[in-house]
Length: 240
Image (tube, rainbow, N blue to C red; front, side, top):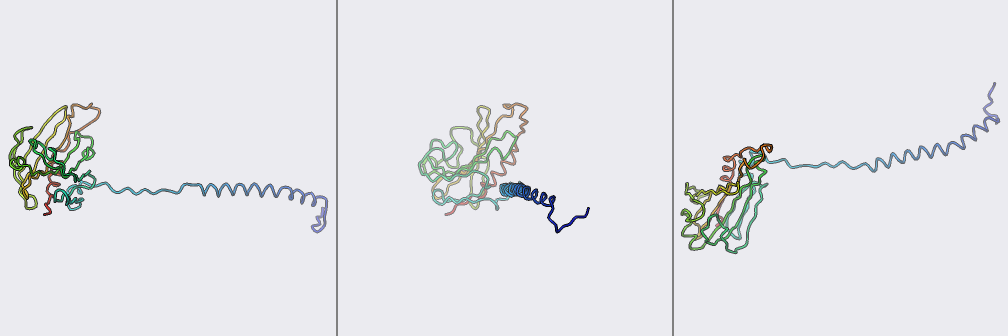
């Protein structure tokens, strides 16, 4: 059969009618699918990039030059450096109390500064925490007994003397225990400008036997903690 393209026939009319009816539905379908695709793209969450600062390495804790420095100008007139991830508090209150040093023999003084080394510093061990304090007192009894062994409380031993940034300190050690906990204190004391100063750190640990074996706790590295605390004390400077 010869098809005459320029001639209107019954089947060309039928084809035109079919296209006329079908094209709107086809356009609507593909338009809907396109809209869903675009909406899906718009609603996709924007990727969030979280940058976590690198954790301090062991070298950091051995390098006081990289630590944060606290200058206690108002109350104590000194500065001290410490790792930035340790909790430090300046006490500007001058209300006298016996908390300015361990075994203060009931002599009042002022606690200027506290620093806490958290349990997480020695994970999976029996290390509980360590606290360093700096206090001072002009109380007559405190001044008189500043560089002498304590007369009450736990036995205190004058173990040595050290010079820290030009100032001589007498070093005392003491220990106490209770309820499965051990507290070992090292106290650095000196007289400065008519006031007794005490820089002390207490290392708190617990008895491993108090924990189930399933915890897998190990003895903490006493030397590591002691060297760290000594390094912090070694940054102490009077500002006056």
